[in-house]
Image 1: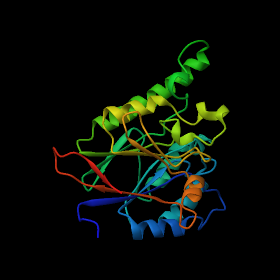
Image 2: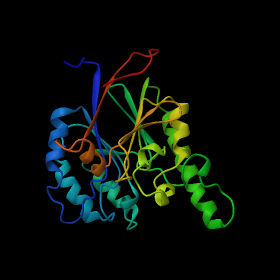
Image 3: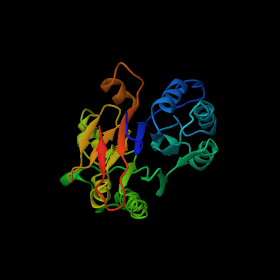
Image 4: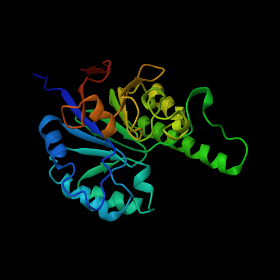
Length: 255
């Protein structure tokens, strides 16, 4: 039996609700409610970022009885209705984090969508055409928003929600040509500096489930196709059991 001071997190991503998705992941939301304390959704909640798609998602989310935290993904921005999509989802009592933070039972959560740009020495830099500089600036801005959100958390345990990957390891399996569009090393820095307990992301459907940052932060790719491959005999949820700690104690992760 888990200790009473343990928070069990269920994580998934890339649900891609469209106008015909009624009931698509209802069973998953019920399962998460029965097996976890909080559900986190790491973007691409809709397929084209349309309000009708968000309503389909919300209809199924009504079957989830635990707190839900989410970030938006690139698909949620596609039709330029992302503010309306966010409002619809929040009406289902989902906390959509966009440079924001939240706390559940003494565990802190911070979230941003993130952006691309590539990894390590091959990361794109702000040099050359204005379009390249704008692209890089978006990646920098997303990393800064993540940093500010993490800085507002005073909890010993900190969990980060992203859509784009902060490390190369969890996009391995995708075509190398698209690695720069799967995530950015710029997102890794805040995770390391704030000694984040774990981070979840999606987006890389053909990627790898687990990796670690350069400072040893566990990173989990929880895109539905990745979880289906990793856990073929169950619904696509990744569970992380975080043992809450008193102020001043070292954070720990159970399992």
